[in-house]
Image (tube, rainbow, N blue to C red; front, side, top):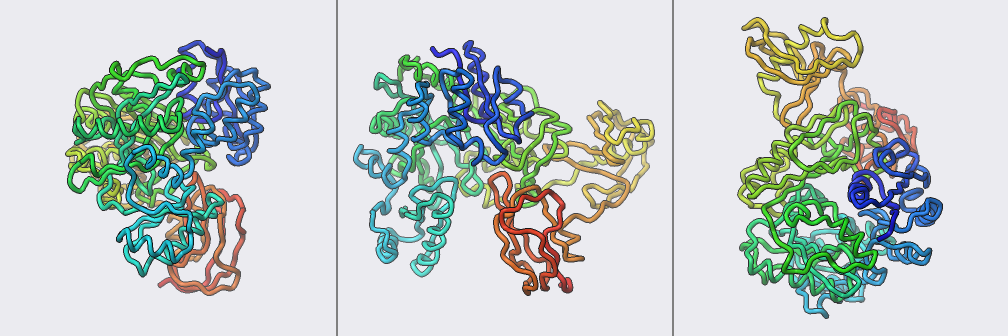
Length: 625
């Protein structure tokens, strides 16, 4: 076994790997960018080395800088984590050429599964069922149109080198195909430098089921059962669970055997995931589950597999990379209970899932569940990386028990002033259709308004806020005061006019006893309930940026980020709803639109500019509709 490991990643990923390394007595080395100099993963490592500026392309995606850091630190091995360079075959080869241990699959396997069309062709040859479609090299638009017509609509166009939903379009009819193909190719070329596409039959009620596989250097491959990752938004996973609800033992045997066969076909070593798409319109049937792609790395959702098998997958990675055989044979790997994971994102679901950044002045996560967190209280949530700040994982003997436990955990999350999706997660987990197992990849979109609408705070919470405001003179004079365990015991039948997130209400003051943590922030009360955060004040708030824009035409940045594109010029006439520019933060794009018909009177940014929250970007002259 090697004695030290450098983790070529950041945040929750690095901290998770460090945890196993410490338990095994392996020294840890972190790398960090300018944005992460004070981050939790840097504080926890035995050594930490700087690798570049904040943008990932200048730091975490720089193979040369990471290799130099490994050699400087004396690390014997490199673990790539998941994301960044984890599926980069050139990086894997460079690590091994430098005389270091690569904790991942062979570069040959990464390349074999890296392109969707080549991977599917390989799976067909190995006898693994794949989704009906077209994988040909002929990329002439007329040929692609003809193949789509033969497959039948709806059809899915997917970038050959794609991922994360980029370069993907669902097409409903033959007439719509040419425009969708052109758009898909443009997006694929911009994102991956490769505009080639493949075609697949669109599955009307898809379930995303994936199988955890593991291989060693002696040629043995096993599976560790399946996960269901169907709860997604914009092709990004939100909630994952193991095992898949509604999957019979017979069907499980078919897909896990196919997954092992797929891994064996590429000589796989280490942790990997074989992803399948299932047509769930008539239940989960073995003849309606097809290979989709392979992820040649550990997955974000690996904790649910660890929970139901009792296996530490990172420890297995360490042992296999150092030449040991698999710790368990297939018959020794057992399935225990049910586990569900929820991804806690720094975003505002009620505001179009807009990313949220800033300092975590208050960050309280629940006990009783496994927490894999990227941050701690006082840390900064940066706009440069993925918005996931923690994962919450519940394990229980039954799916109902795990779901109840996780829903309560998400409802107990307290974060301020950064916004999170905790309440949204709790509502997903509490939804009757989720509880019954009636899930597919369209679950969230079909219920989007219901799941993203923030409920009003309860009467009890409003009463507590009113009493706290009355008692606030007794609190600290500091602009940030905390009334820990504040107890309400006030005069009955009194009312106080308050503003809850800007909306006026008459809050009753009750003589009931309630107890809660209360934050006093600049004269307002901040309270937490069912995963949501409410700001309650005695004065009406200043209008938000969108409201001000509708009045004075000033377009301000709603978040720190990068200006990706500017679609207008000074003096241009615009119409209400027209996209003026696009900002990018936390790997997400956000379009800024005109609030009314008018003329661009001022424009202060160009594509490529970095902007802070609230900065004036443009101004329109005209009249509100």
